[in-house]
Length: 338
Image (cartoon, rainbow, N blue to C red; front, top):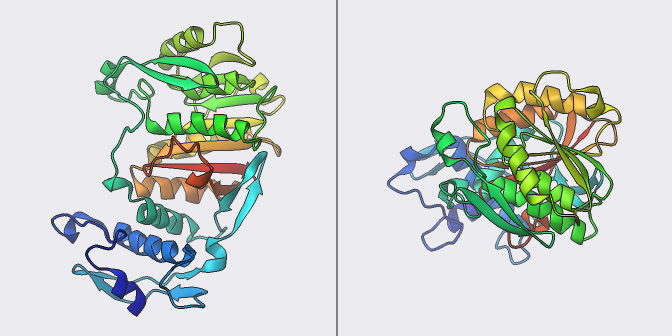
Protein backbone atom coordinates (compact mmCIF):
# COMPACT_ATOMS: atom_id res chain seq x y z
CA UNK A 1 0.00 0.00 0.00
CA UNK A 2 2.96 2.36 0.41
CA UNK A 3 3.30 2.57 -3.37
CA UNK A 4 -0.38 3.39 -3.89
CA UNK A 5 -0.40 5.99 -1.11
CA UNK A 6 2.74 7.66 -2.44
CA UNK A 7 1.09 8.23 -5.81
CA UNK A 8 -2.10 9.79 -4.42
CA UNK A 9 -0.90 13.36 -4.50
CA UNK A 10 -1.97 16.65 -6.06
CA UNK A 11 -0.66 17.03 -9.57
CA UNK A 12 -0.74 13.35 -10.41
CA UNK A 13 -2.99 13.11 -13.50
CA UNK A 14 -4.64 9.99 -12.10
CA UNK A 15 -5.47 11.51 -8.72
CA UNK A 16 -9.25 11.99 -8.67
CA UNK A 17 -10.90 15.35 -8.29
CA UNK A 18 -13.15 14.91 -5.28
CA UNK A 19 -14.73 18.33 -5.61
CA UNK A 20 -15.99 19.73 -2.31
CA UNK A 21 -15.37 16.55 -0.39
CA UNK A 22 -15.55 12.80 -0.38
CA UNK A 23 -19.11 12.64 0.89
CA UNK A 24 -20.31 13.34 -2.66
CA UNK A 25 -19.02 9.97 -3.86
CA UNK A 26 -19.87 6.45 -2.86
CA UNK A 27 -17.31 4.15 -1.28
CA UNK A 28 -17.83 1.83 -4.22
CA UNK A 29 -16.84 4.49 -6.75
CA UNK A 30 -13.79 5.45 -4.69
CA UNK A 31 -12.75 1.80 -4.40
CA UNK A 32 -13.26 1.54 -8.12
CA UNK A 33 -10.95 4.48 -8.69
CA UNK A 34 -8.29 2.77 -6.58
CA UNK A 35 -8.66 -0.44 -8.58
CA UNK A 36 -8.38 1.52 -11.80
CA UNK A 37 -5.35 3.38 -10.49
CA UNK A 38 -3.57 0.15 -9.58
CA UNK A 39 -4.54 -1.52 -12.86
CA UNK A 40 -3.36 1.44 -14.91
CA UNK A 41 0.08 1.44 -13.30
CA UNK A 42 0.53 -2.31 -13.52
CA UNK A 43 -0.12 -2.15 -17.26
CA UNK A 44 2.25 0.75 -17.98
CA UNK A 45 5.75 -0.18 -19.05
CA UNK A 46 7.19 2.74 -17.07
CA UNK A 47 5.12 1.97 -13.99
CA UNK A 48 6.66 3.03 -10.66
CA UNK A 49 5.21 -0.10 -9.09
CA UNK A 50 7.76 -2.50 -7.59
CA UNK A 51 8.78 -5.34 -9.90
CA UNK A 52 7.74 -8.06 -10.00
CA UNK A 53 4.19 -7.12 -9.05
CA UNK A 54 1.94 -10.11 -9.83
CA UNK A 55 -0.68 -9.04 -7.33
CA UNK A 56 -1.72 -6.28 -4.96
CA UNK A 57 -3.80 -7.05 -1.91
CA UNK A 58 -5.90 -4.15 -0.73
CA UNK A 59 -5.98 -3.52 2.99
CA UNK A 60 -7.73 -1.02 5.21
CA UNK A 61 -7.03 2.31 3.58
CA UNK A 62 -8.13 5.83 4.41
CA UNK A 63 -8.32 8.47 1.70
CA UNK A 64 -9.91 11.89 2.07
CA UNK A 65 -11.58 10.72 5.26
CA UNK A 66 -13.20 7.62 3.71
CA UNK A 67 -12.21 4.28 5.18
CA UNK A 68 -12.22 1.51 2.65
CA UNK A 69 -11.92 -2.21 3.19
CA UNK A 70 -11.42 -4.51 0.22
CA UNK A 71 -10.42 -8.12 0.02
CA UNK A 72 -9.88 -8.43 -3.73
CA UNK A 73 -6.55 -9.55 -5.09
CA UNK A 74 -5.76 -7.98 -8.43
CA UNK A 75 -3.66 -10.37 -10.48
CA UNK A 76 -1.81 -9.03 -13.48
CA UNK A 77 -2.48 -12.22 -15.43
CA UNK A 78 -6.22 -11.79 -14.91
CA UNK A 79 -6.15 -8.19 -16.08
CA UNK A 80 -4.27 -9.11 -19.24
CA UNK A 81 -6.53 -11.99 -20.34
CA UNK A 82 -7.77 -11.12 -23.82
CA UNK A 83 -9.25 -13.58 -26.30
CA UNK A 84 -11.32 -13.59 -29.48
CA UNK A 85 -15.01 -14.09 -28.84
CA UNK A 86 -17.71 -15.06 -31.30
CA UNK A 87 -17.41 -13.77 -34.85
CA UNK A 88 -15.49 -10.65 -33.88
CA UNK A 89 -11.86 -10.91 -34.96
CA UNK A 90 -10.47 -8.54 -32.36
CA UNK A 91 -9.55 -9.53 -28.84
CA UNK A 92 -11.79 -8.68 -25.91
CA UNK A 93 -11.17 -8.68 -22.19
CA UNK A 94 -13.25 -11.59 -20.87
CA UNK A 95 -14.97 -11.24 -17.52
CA UNK A 96 -14.15 -14.00 -15.08
CA UNK A 97 -16.96 -16.41 -14.27
CA UNK A 98 -17.27 -15.81 -10.53
CA UNK A 99 -19.68 -14.05 -8.22
CA UNK A 100 -17.42 -11.03 -7.73
CA UNK A 101 -16.70 -10.42 -11.41
CA UNK A 102 -19.58 -8.03 -12.15
CA UNK A 103 -18.76 -5.87 -9.14
CA UNK A 104 -15.07 -5.83 -10.02
CA UNK A 105 -15.86 -4.87 -13.61
CA UNK A 106 -18.01 -1.89 -12.64
CA UNK A 107 -15.42 -0.75 -10.10
CA UNK A 108 -12.75 -0.96 -12.78
CA UNK A 109 -14.78 1.00 -15.34
CA UNK A 110 -15.70 3.77 -12.94
CA UNK A 111 -12.14 3.82 -11.66
CA UNK A 112 -10.31 4.00 -14.98
CA UNK A 113 -12.78 5.90 -17.17
CA UNK A 114 -14.28 8.12 -14.44
CA UNK A 115 -17.46 8.77 -16.44
CA UNK A 116 -18.93 11.15 -13.86
CA UNK A 117 -16.14 13.62 -14.61
CA UNK A 118 -16.52 13.44 -18.40
CA UNK A 119 -18.66 15.58 -20.67
CA UNK A 120 -21.88 13.84 -21.78
CA UNK A 121 -23.18 13.87 -25.34
CA UNK A 122 -19.85 14.41 -27.09
CA UNK A 123 -21.20 13.23 -30.45
CA UNK A 124 -24.90 14.12 -30.25
CA UNK A 125 -27.15 17.06 -29.48
CA UNK A 126 -30.45 15.96 -28.00
CA UNK A 127 -32.01 19.39 -28.43
CA UNK A 128 -31.52 19.18 -32.20
CA UNK A 129 -34.16 17.85 -34.57
CA UNK A 130 -31.59 15.71 -36.37
CA UNK A 131 -28.14 14.18 -36.10
CA UNK A 132 -25.86 14.37 -39.13
CA UNK A 133 -23.07 11.84 -39.49
CA UNK A 134 -20.75 10.56 -42.21
CA UNK A 135 -20.63 6.76 -42.22
CA UNK A 136 -19.64 4.15 -44.80
CA UNK A 137 -19.24 6.80 -47.50
CA UNK A 138 -22.76 8.13 -46.93
CA UNK A 139 -24.11 11.26 -45.27
CA UNK A 140 -26.71 10.17 -42.73
CA UNK A 141 -29.38 12.48 -41.37
CA UNK A 142 -31.09 10.91 -38.37
CA UNK A 143 -34.29 12.60 -37.22
CA UNK A 144 -34.86 13.04 -33.48
CA UNK A 145 -37.84 14.00 -31.35
CA UNK A 146 -36.47 16.11 -28.48
CA UNK A 147 -39.96 16.98 -27.25
CA UNK A 148 -40.55 13.32 -26.40
CA UNK A 149 -37.82 13.43 -23.73
CA UNK A 150 -40.28 15.11 -21.38
CA UNK A 151 -42.81 12.28 -21.75
CA UNK A 152 -42.52 9.76 -18.89
CA UNK A 153 -41.52 6.28 -20.02
CA UNK A 154 -40.59 7.31 -23.55
CA UNK A 155 -37.10 6.29 -24.67
CA UNK A 156 -35.43 6.03 -28.05
CA UNK A 157 -36.61 9.39 -29.37
CA UNK A 158 -33.12 10.92 -29.40
CA UNK A 159 -29.59 9.67 -29.96
CA UNK A 160 -27.04 8.95 -27.26
CA UNK A 161 -23.27 8.74 -27.62
CA UNK A 162 -23.34 4.96 -27.25
CA UNK A 163 -25.29 4.61 -30.50
CA UNK A 164 -22.78 6.68 -32.44
CA UNK A 165 -19.89 4.80 -30.81
CA UNK A 166 -21.37 1.40 -31.70
CA UNK A 167 -22.21 2.38 -35.27
CA UNK A 168 -18.76 3.78 -35.96
CA UNK A 169 -17.18 0.78 -34.22
CA UNK A 170 -18.94 -1.54 -36.67
CA UNK A 171 -17.69 0.52 -39.60
CA UNK A 172 -14.13 0.57 -38.21
CA UNK A 173 -14.15 -3.17 -37.45
CA UNK A 174 -15.34 -4.01 -40.98
CA UNK A 175 -12.76 -1.67 -42.54
CA UNK A 176 -10.07 -3.27 -40.35
CA UNK A 177 -11.03 -6.79 -41.44
CA UNK A 178 -12.10 -7.78 -37.93
CA UNK A 179 -15.80 -8.12 -38.72
CA UNK A 180 -17.84 -9.37 -41.67
CA UNK A 181 -21.40 -8.05 -41.95
CA UNK A 182 -22.01 -8.44 -45.68
CA UNK A 183 -24.91 -10.86 -46.21
CA UNK A 184 -25.25 -11.54 -42.48
CA UNK A 185 -28.55 -11.65 -40.60
CA UNK A 186 -28.64 -8.91 -37.97
CA UNK A 187 -31.29 -8.03 -35.39
CA UNK A 188 -31.07 -4.75 -33.51
CA UNK A 189 -32.85 -4.36 -30.17
CA UNK A 190 -34.21 -1.02 -28.98
CA UNK A 191 -33.32 0.58 -32.30
CA UNK A 192 -34.68 4.00 -31.32
CA UNK A 193 -33.75 6.44 -34.06
CA UNK A 194 -32.14 3.69 -36.15
CA UNK A 195 -28.56 4.89 -36.63
CA UNK A 196 -26.84 1.60 -35.74
CA UNK A 197 -29.16 -0.44 -37.96
CA UNK A 198 -28.65 1.97 -40.86
CA UNK A 199 -24.88 1.63 -40.60
CA UNK A 200 -25.13 -2.17 -40.42
CA UNK A 201 -27.25 -2.16 -43.60
CA UNK A 202 -24.74 0.11 -45.36
CA UNK A 203 -22.09 -2.45 -44.42
CA UNK A 204 -24.05 -5.13 -46.26
CA UNK A 205 -26.10 -6.77 -43.49
CA UNK A 206 -29.73 -7.89 -43.74
CA UNK A 207 -30.99 -5.94 -40.75
CA UNK A 208 -34.21 -6.13 -38.76
CA UNK A 209 -34.56 -3.08 -36.54
CA UNK A 210 -36.91 -3.60 -33.59
CA UNK A 211 -38.52 -1.46 -30.92
CA UNK A 212 -41.78 -0.85 -29.08
CA UNK A 213 -44.91 -0.03 -31.13
CA UNK A 214 -44.93 3.69 -30.36
CA UNK A 215 -41.29 4.06 -31.48
CA UNK A 216 -41.71 2.60 -34.95
CA UNK A 217 -42.94 5.69 -36.81
CA UNK A 218 -39.73 7.68 -36.26
CA UNK A 219 -37.65 4.57 -36.86
CA UNK A 220 -39.31 3.86 -40.21
CA UNK A 221 -38.90 7.48 -41.28
CA UNK A 222 -35.16 7.37 -40.65
CA UNK A 223 -34.75 4.09 -42.50
CA UNK A 224 -36.66 5.39 -45.52
CA UNK A 225 -34.75 8.67 -45.54
CA UNK A 226 -31.25 7.24 -45.24
CA UNK A 227 -31.47 3.95 -47.12
CA UNK A 228 -33.63 4.84 -50.10
CA UNK A 229 -30.71 5.33 -52.51
CA UNK A 230 -29.81 2.43 -54.75
CA UNK A 231 -26.23 1.81 -53.62
CA UNK A 232 -27.04 0.30 -50.21
CA UNK A 233 -25.28 -3.06 -50.00
CA UNK A 234 -27.64 -4.56 -47.43
CA UNK A 235 -31.28 -4.13 -46.43
CA UNK A 236 -33.33 -2.97 -43.46
CA UNK A 237 -36.84 -3.67 -42.22
CA UNK A 238 -38.59 -2.44 -39.10
CA UNK A 239 -40.46 -4.73 -36.71
CA UNK A 240 -42.19 -4.48 -33.36
CA UNK A 241 -40.53 -6.48 -30.60
CA UNK A 242 -41.41 -6.24 -26.93
CA UNK A 243 -38.69 -7.63 -24.69
CA UNK A 244 -39.82 -10.69 -22.79
CA UNK A 245 -42.36 -11.71 -25.44
CA UNK A 246 -41.71 -14.61 -27.78
CA UNK A 247 -40.05 -13.30 -30.96
CA UNK A 248 -41.62 -14.02 -34.34
CA UNK A 249 -40.38 -17.27 -35.84
CA UNK A 250 -38.59 -15.62 -38.75
CA UNK A 251 -36.39 -13.71 -36.31
CA UNK A 252 -34.98 -16.94 -34.89
CA UNK A 253 -35.23 -19.34 -37.84
CA UNK A 254 -32.44 -19.17 -38.67
CA UNK A 255 -30.86 -17.49 -35.67
CA UNK A 256 -29.25 -14.10 -36.35
CA UNK A 257 -25.53 -13.94 -36.99
CA UNK A 258 -25.42 -10.77 -34.89
CA UNK A 259 -27.60 -9.00 -32.34
CA UNK A 260 -26.92 -5.31 -31.73
CA UNK A 261 -28.02 -2.95 -28.98
CA UNK A 262 -27.04 0.55 -27.86
CA UNK A 263 -28.15 2.04 -24.56
CA UNK A 264 -30.43 -0.91 -23.85
CA UNK A 265 -29.18 -1.40 -20.26
CA UNK A 266 -30.76 1.60 -18.56
CA UNK A 267 -32.76 0.23 -15.60
CA UNK A 268 -32.78 -2.86 -13.42
CA UNK A 269 -36.46 -3.34 -14.22
CA UNK A 270 -35.72 -3.95 -17.91
CA UNK A 271 -32.80 -6.36 -17.42
CA UNK A 272 -34.78 -9.59 -16.98
CA UNK A 273 -36.89 -9.07 -20.12
CA UNK A 274 -33.86 -7.92 -22.12
CA UNK A 275 -31.89 -11.03 -21.19
CA UNK A 276 -34.88 -13.26 -21.87
CA UNK A 277 -35.09 -11.81 -25.38
CA UNK A 278 -31.33 -12.17 -25.93
CA UNK A 279 -31.47 -15.82 -24.88
CA UNK A 280 -34.36 -16.50 -27.27
CA UNK A 281 -32.77 -14.66 -30.19
CA UNK A 282 -29.32 -16.19 -29.96
CA UNK A 283 -28.00 -19.49 -31.20
CA UNK A 284 -24.58 -21.01 -30.65
CA UNK A 285 -23.10 -18.97 -33.53
CA UNK A 286 -24.72 -15.62 -32.67
CA UNK A 287 -22.49 -12.75 -31.58
CA UNK A 288 -23.96 -9.88 -29.55
CA UNK A 289 -22.56 -6.34 -29.49
CA UNK A 290 -23.88 -4.04 -26.76
CA UNK A 291 -22.76 -0.47 -26.10
CA UNK A 292 -24.11 1.61 -23.26
CA UNK A 293 -23.80 4.84 -21.36
CA UNK A 294 -22.07 4.59 -17.98
CA UNK A 295 -24.75 6.28 -15.90
CA UNK A 296 -25.39 3.93 -12.99
CA UNK A 297 -22.87 1.38 -11.74
CA UNK A 298 -25.53 -0.59 -9.86
CA UNK A 299 -27.60 -1.14 -13.02
CA UNK A 300 -24.58 -2.26 -15.04
CA UNK A 301 -23.44 -4.60 -12.27
CA UNK A 302 -26.93 -6.10 -12.04
CA UNK A 303 -27.00 -6.69 -15.80
CA UNK A 304 -23.52 -8.20 -15.99
CA UNK A 305 -24.14 -10.48 -13.04
CA UNK A 306 -27.34 -11.79 -14.66
CA UNK A 307 -25.88 -11.95 -18.18
CA UNK A 308 -22.91 -14.08 -17.13
CA UNK A 309 -25.26 -16.86 -16.10
CA UNK A 310 -26.18 -17.37 -19.78
CA UNK A 311 -23.37 -15.76 -21.76
CA UNK A 312 -19.63 -15.39 -21.93
CA UNK A 313 -19.06 -11.63 -21.68
CA UNK A 314 -16.06 -9.68 -22.94
CA UNK A 315 -15.38 -5.96 -22.89
CA UNK A 316 -14.05 -4.32 -26.05
CA UNK A 317 -11.22 -1.99 -25.10
CA UNK A 318 -11.42 1.54 -26.50
CA UNK A 319 -8.19 0.97 -28.43
CA UNK A 320 -10.29 -1.19 -30.79
CA UNK A 321 -13.04 1.41 -31.31
CA UNK A 322 -13.12 3.93 -34.11
CA UNK A 323 -10.29 6.29 -33.09
CA UNK A 324 -12.41 9.41 -33.58
CA UNK A 325 -15.41 8.04 -31.68
CA UNK A 326 -14.28 7.06 -28.20
CA UNK A 327 -15.88 8.22 -24.96
CA UNK A 328 -15.09 7.53 -21.29
CA UNK A 329 -18.83 7.56 -20.67
CA UNK A 330 -19.43 4.50 -22.87
CA UNK A 331 -18.61 0.81 -22.46
CA UNK A 332 -18.92 -1.90 -25.11
CA UNK A 333 -19.34 -5.65 -24.67
CA UNK A 334 -19.37 -8.78 -26.81
CA UNK A 335 -21.56 -11.68 -25.62
CA UNK A 336 -21.88 -15.25 -26.85
CA UNK A 337 -24.01 -18.04 -25.47
CA UNK A 338 -22.34 -20.54 -23.16
